[in-house]
Length: 383
Image (tube, rainbow, N blue to C red):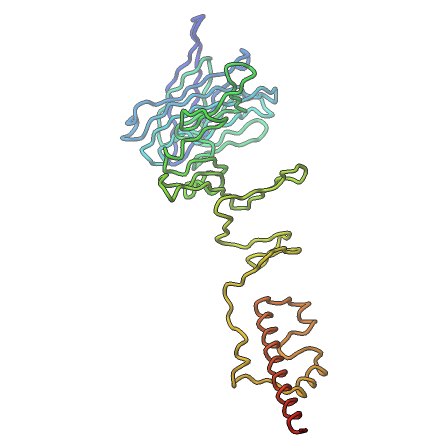
C-alpha cells in the first residue's frame, strides 16, 4: 500500500515546521523506500528533515528508538549543489532487524521528483517526521518506487555500509581549520587529545584494535586498515602497529630523492607466512626469490641433512682411477656431480653441492695417499 501525506506550512513568519505521524507496513525484516519531498528546493535553501520515535515500546515491546536528522538538497535533473547530511541515532537492543534506517539516496537524478529516499523498517512501525519546510511523504511498502526515468527503488534486507547506529554521515568533504583562516585545526576520534592533525585514543587508553579501516567487517574489523593491535599496553609485550590489506601492500617510496627508501629498524623484519620476492613478482615456492646478485660478507647454513665424512668409511665405494677415467670420458663430468645441462635447467642446491664437492676433495685426498704409498713402495724396491 502506498501512503501519501501533505505537510502544510504554518502561517508563522519566523518558524516554519511540518509534522506528521506515519506507519511503514510490510515485513518486519525489510526496509521499505519512503520518499520525502525537497520542500526547500524552490525556496533556495536546504530541507531539514527529522525522523523519530522516542519510545522503545511503541508498536511492540522493546522495538527500539530512533532520532535521525537529514539536511539535504536534491539535484533536480542535475542543477548541482546537491548533498545529503545525516545524523542517525538508532537503538535496537543488539538485534540488527531492529534497526530502523537502512539507507538513503537522492532520487532526483535525471528527473523532477525532487525527493530524498529513506529506507525505513517495516512491519507496522510508526514514525514521526518534522521539517523546516512543507514536504510530502510517500511510503512504498507494497511495491517499489519507480522514477519517471525508470530507476526502481525497492526494499532492502540489510543496512548499507555507510549506515551507523550512532553517527554522522556527510554528503561531501570535511575541512577542519583552526581559529584563523591560516591555522589548520585537528580532528580527534575517541579522544580529546590534539597532539597531531588526526588524533586517535592513546595506546594506553583502549585494549581494542584502534585505527583506520577501509572495509567494514564484523568478523575481522582490522582486515583492511592500519591499527594498533588489540590487547593491554603492558611491558614487555607492548602492542604493535598492524597494517592489514588482504589484496596486498605496496611500499613505494619512489626513486627521485636521496632518502627514497623504506627503512626498517627495531628487532628486524619477520615474514611469518608466505614467500618473499626481490626483483621479481613470482617467487613461486621459494621462501626468498632474488632476481639479481646477492652481496653478503657471510652466509651460514644452519642445518645440513648429511656430510661427506662417509668417504672415510669402509662402506663407501670409491672407484679406481681407471674406472674414474672411463666415466669422465663417457659422461664429461665427475660421478655424483650433475652435468652442465642439468645445472642450466634446474640450478643447484648450495648446501648439497658443497657436500658433493667435499666428497670429491676427500676422495682426491685418499687417491693422493694411495699414490704416495705406491711411490714409496717403488722407491724401497729399487734400493
